[in-house]
Image (cartoon, rainbow, N blue to C red; front, side, top):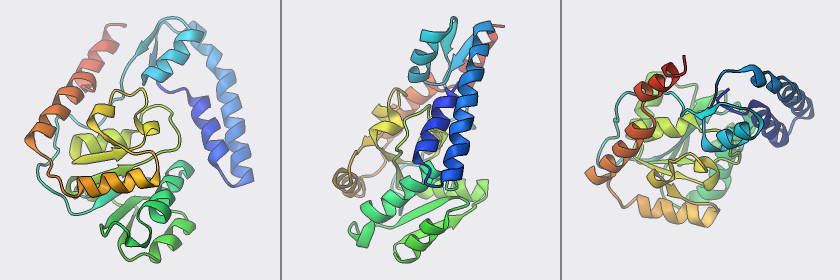
Length: 249
């Protein structure tokens, strides 16, 4: 199971501004909720985060927490400084579109931070493209290849990753933690993920700006690397989590 999919689609529907798309997502959420009862017959159900585990465990038996699998076998976070802030994600998804607009129109607006921002991702919507063209210190990277995205992640100084939907765990945060330097997020991004100790937190425009100004003066040090390595390789090891699956087979 991993995610509580109906809840994810329901929140996507609520955030969607297009009525036809919202109606479609509500229908998908309803169908997924109906289908969920099939889990009554499962020998074991895996949940991707403590939040999902708590929900599934109250409705079904033999539920086990199994963190997300990802593309990384080792920590590659570079020491020192990067040269920009980065937000990345599938920009066609309204959740990511709204987060990007929040950064463009609230946090980085009018170049108040005097710090460049790159927004990178798939299929950015027209509104986001128009807003970015009005602000020379913000750059849009459309449909980057995997290699280009990995380079952007590695060279960034701060990964600014707000979300307004606290479902599951965001793989883009795991990618940033394994490959990048500092991660600045809000509570919804890390709630019940175990990743909060590895991130800097901000929950409004002022705190995002203050944290960005603070982080722009810092270097990513060996102590930061070691703290990240200890937590990620303990809880998000693909090998260890694969062995957990095997133990149930």
